[in-house]
Image 1 (spheres, rainbow, N blue to C red):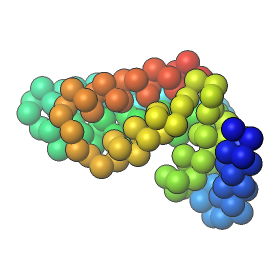
Image 2: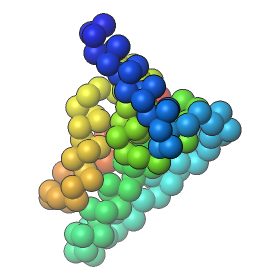
Image 3: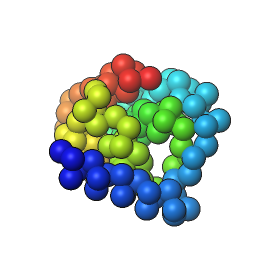
Image 4: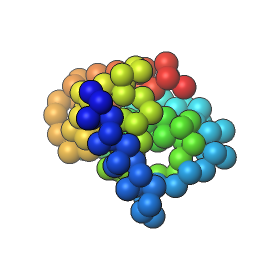
Length: 135
């Protein structure tokens, strides 16, 4: 685990030295708003799936996960512009504290916009629930 922690810290430093992740403590105040937006997108995804609009529902379910993840990154005091740097920030601040590598893998998987509606909703709900507990 120590080697993994060192690797995560090195990746975090690399992201912070890039234009894709920067310290921004003012973002902490926006974290809950991101979670609210995630919940709204989740409701829209449910409605889209009920209307047999699978493509839109998958995008909205992914969007719900993205907004919940961005809320966590904001809560850690960062502004983020790249999904990989978002994942690194999540690993650095929340891994083993309520978020696991499988959760981050599910976030990445959701971006593919594939899978049955029930699975997409379950994945999004589980991620949002974990994010809510961490905020």
